[in-house]
Length: 74
Image (tube, rainbow, N blue to C red; front, side, top):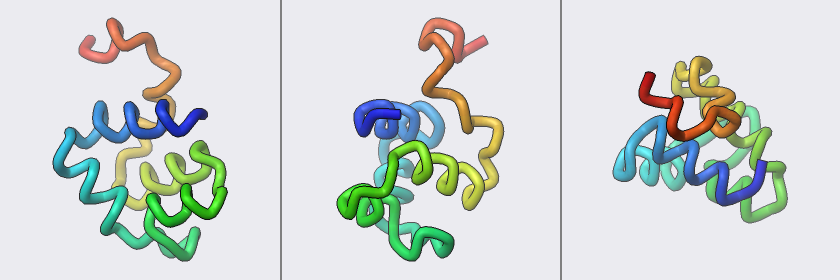
């Protein structure tokens, strides 16, 4: 997962405002940081995304970045 795919997945899953809030404010205990801080220290975006999905109860969105955007709304 690329950083751009991470942020696209965040927006597609949580929306713009809530997604930004989760990335910057939600402390991910298993990573010991927020998503933004974890990414800035070099943690793989895929690991950060998996953790964010788990912590927010959105395991159903785990692979959204692999789904064709035209198919997401179905």
